[in-house]
Image: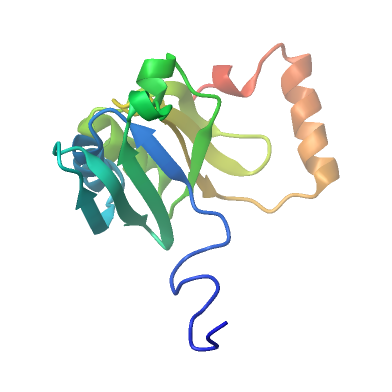
Length: 164
């Protein structure tokens, strides 16, 4: 192995999400508007669809590609949902929340102060991907988190039902 080549490229983390979606070019534009994404790379295929693209949100890279159903690559719209939530820690959850909604995201869990110490909410983007937006506001022990959870459950609520 060439010692000059880094096994994990500069600027990347060990885990990098790779999103598949219908309309990857539009998704990139949405992520720029909603989350301040910076486009790093784009490789279009012969049919104009994006074979591979990369963006950066904050200090994290995300790879994207258009869906290619003929090759078994389908996005969440084709699958009618996703079990994955992409988590964003940001300086100001309220500002990013408003920016994402302005860009066209739909709230799926209200932004509110949560029992684990974050201001947190979830949105769905127009391409079917779900994003959580959070600002860490309070360092809590596991015991304090469980106490908050138990108080919430005793009150008959769940995080998605808390007032924002």
